[in-house]
Image (tube, rainbow, N blue to C red; front, side, top):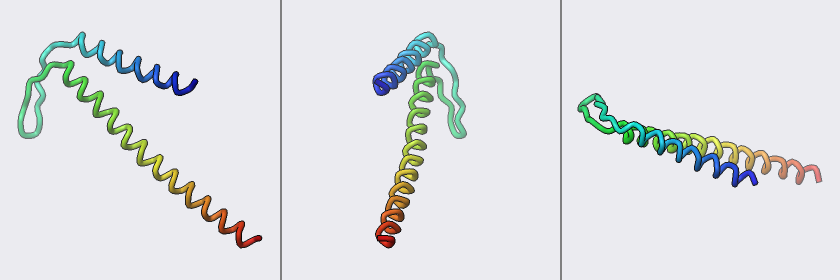
Length: 86
């Protein structure tokens, strides 16, 4: 049930991002360090949205990997302590 709810929220956020981007077709000028570019606002919003998701997934993946490693290490220590006591 929770998975369905999470997928529904994610889908609604994607639809909301799409609706907001279609309502903003104006061109904006982006100034980079070396160059500048003119892009539609919808494209810039989509790029920022995708980058935000990618960065969030990367950070979450790093933290989950650390947590799993710590859990594995503690579980290994606990089994070694139990083996010594028995």
